[in-house]
Length: 99
Image (cartoon, rainbow, N blue to C red; front, side):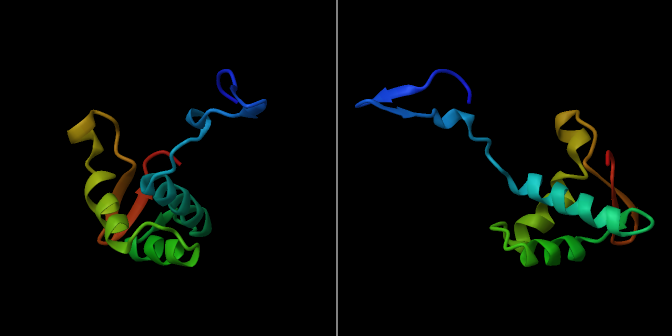
């Protein structure tokens, strides 16, 4: 638990700041790691990620997943200076830049 607890009428309540926000990007990376381990060449497609996220009942919409993968996760270096999360290895196939 981060920081001191707050007292409320004799009850101890943990601060909410200790809870990490879980983003669609985090979930995409988690699923991509699973798929990369399952494939011998370590690659996966956008469709495979979308299907896996649906099967896991993710709250991220298909469109959000595609947008993250095809725009944000590949082009990070140009916009943020950080290395990209994904590398396009061939038509419709991707690999994690840092497994």
